[in-house]
Image 1 (cartoon, rainbow, N blue to C red):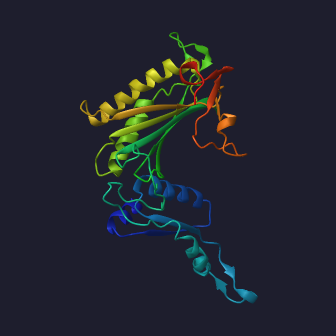
Image 2: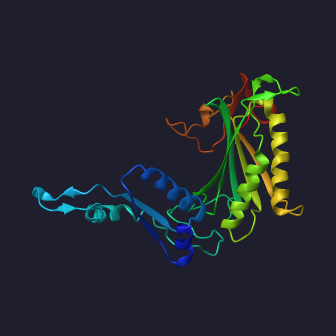
Image 3: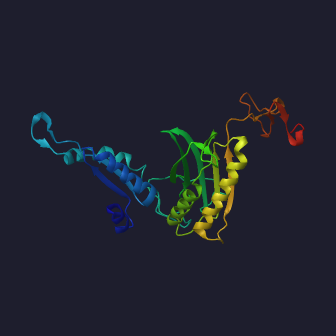
Length: 286
């Protein structure tokens, strides 16, 4: 509540300096401040500093309080602050007010517009006996600040009789609720509008699970969009699956190589998949 009052008290606030106690509370306070200001408010940067216990002055004369010791460190702290401060507040692109991020894409792809949200999703296993599903979403047009949602779920597929099957559960079971929450938070950060394009990057799906996983998750994404934007809300949706355990390799033909580094002038090559040379229509490609 105090952070919210700071946020709305002065629209030109650029930095909040937080003095933390030196006892065991400092870690909890630090996490709460950073979580709320960096992922929810995102309107000003924060700098936290811990007040050390009172100590004797030089030569054992006098006593310095924790605040006095912090004041002596201010010059060194201020040197690190410019990198945290925003270049500007808000803008005409609808990105809203961003804090502690000076990142801007110089030549973004035509899909990466202020009305685009990028989602990334994966499931990790063997985390304290459960699987953890995570989904992150870009928050604005800089594509450098993120929103996140986490859910714990069963690490194994459960059959109709609720018995454990042998294969692991790669589907994100609560993707609808997670995506709906991210869409609402994206809307709150972008002038009460929803994204027109959604790029969904999915990791950790094997060839044998493409159909069951992506069919279910496509339906879940569509349901989340319906819940948040209503039946008339139909953004462009692109699903991209990333895999690293595959046999596809791309390399340049020796005749097209432009030097020892293997850089060719045309940028074309011949790929290998499953031990068979591939190209255009099975023919050698140029």
